[in-house]
Length: 613
Image 1 (spheres, rainbow, N blue to C red):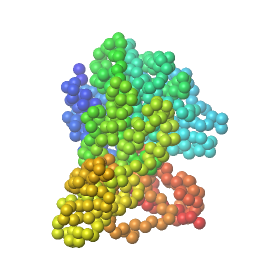
Image 2 (spheres, rainbow, N blue to C red):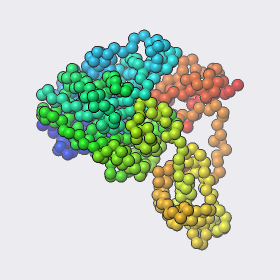
Image 3 (tube, one colour):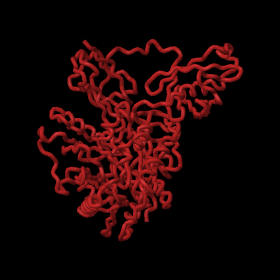
Image 4 (spheres, rainbow, N blue to C red):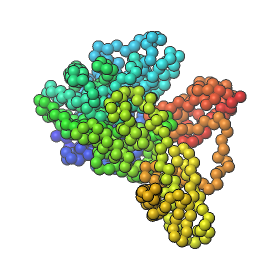
C-alpha cells in the first residue's frame, strides 16, 4: 500500500492529485521551483521540496532532482501529473530504479507512444516525407509532449522552413525534445478522444468519448463528454481502436487515444500515456475518481470486468490568464480574487492573492459542469462562469461564456477551426456601459465631506476610465440629497455596492478596486489620471511587448538601420511556454532596437521602432 506520494508537477494538477490523496489517507509531497515557493500546491502538500531555479528546464524537467526529492522526503510513490516528465520513459525508469512506485504505465509503453512518430508507425501510419504543393496545408508537430506546443499550420511552401525552426525551438523548451514531424492538416475536423483505463491483469476499460474541438493554438479550451452527435458505429470503432492501441503496448493505468474525425472517418493522432487535463468530464459522466483508480492500479488491484455505465453530460472550460482579443497574449500579475459558484466543480492551482508569473502555463483553473443533458450542462457552466468573480489580470472568461452560448457550439456543429472563424465576434467589446459610473460613485463614497470639490455642490465631478480598450468619461454631482448622475437615479452608493435606477429597473453593481484597477461585476476598468502624462507619447512605428516574456530570438542580421518589410518577423518572445512572433508594423527602416536575446520584458515595454519612409 502506498503511504506517501510525491507529485512531480505543479499548479492545478498537483492540487487535484493531493485532494484525492487526502481522501485515501496518503501523505503528500510537493516539489517546487524558486518561482513557485509560495504557490498553492507547495502550501497544501504535507511536505515540499525545493528544486533550485525558475525555468522548467532547471526544475520540473530535471528528473534526477525529482527522484532525489522523493527519496529524501520519504515518499514511496511518484505521480507525474501531466506535462513536464509525465511521458518521459527514462524518468519512469529512474523512479522504479529508486525502488519507488510509478503511478503510470510501464516505461516501455511510454517509450512506444510518447513519440508521435513512433506511435503512428505502431498503428501503421507514416508521417509525410518531402512536402510538396499538393500536400498543403500541413501541420508541423512536436514528436514529444502536447498542449499545442511545438505546432504550426503551414499553408505555403515558403513558410515551411520557419515553421519547422519555430516548432523545434518551442518543443525543445517545453519538453526537452526538439524532434518534429509533418502530417496532413485536415480542415474542419473534430478532435475526439477516448479515455482508457487498464490494469496489470489484462482488463482495458474504454471510458467514453470526449470532444475537444474548441482549441486555440492547438491547445484545448472547452472539452465535453460524451462527444455529441457521433454515429453509434463510429463510436464503437473509436472504442476498438483505443483498446487496440492500449493492448499493443501492454498498457497499464490511465491514458487517452486521440483522433481527428471528419464526417464518419476517424484518423489516429496519438496516444497520451498520462492523465489528461480534461479528465474531470469523464469522471463526472462515469462517477469515477481517475486519480484514485490510477493509484489502485499501481498498487496491483484489478479492475472490474466491465466499466461503470455513463450518465448525463459534462463540459469543462479552461480559464486562462490571457487576452483573446490580442492574439491570446498571456497575462501576469496578482490574482486578487477567484471564486466560482458552487454549482460547478473548480480545479485550480491558485487562490486569492497569488501571483501569476511568466514561467509556466497560463491556465488558472478548470470549471466543470455536469447535468442530465448537454443543453443543461452548457447552460449551467455558462451561467456559473458569468457569475464568477475574477479580479486580476485579463482572462478568457467572456470568451468562454460566449463560446458556450454560440449557436455553432450549442448545435454541436463545431470543429477545430471554430476560433479561426468566430474569434472576432467572440471578442467584440461588450462591457457594461454603466460600469464606469458605478466605479466613480463607489470611489466617491467615503471621501471627506469637507473636500474642496464638495463645497461647490452644483459643479459636476469627472472621472475617466479605460474600459474594453476605450476611454470613458463620467460625470456626477454630490448634493445635500446625495450623489446624482445625469439620466440615472442613484439608489445607493457605497464603496463596494452601487445600485442605479435604470429606466425603472434597479441594477446592482459590485465594485472592487485594487489601485487603479477596478472590477465592476464582470467588467474590468482602469482608472485614468485626471491629467494625461505628456511624456507618454510614443514615436510612430513603436513596437511594444504585448505580454511579459523573454526575448528568445532576434531575426538573423537584424540591426538598427536595416530595411524591413511590413509583416516581416523581427523577434520572438517566450512566455508561459509559448513563443510569440513580433512582426514589423510597416515597411521602412528599423530606427531603434531596444532588446537583446535573453532579456526579460514587461507588457508595454518598447522593443523596437520601425520608421516608415
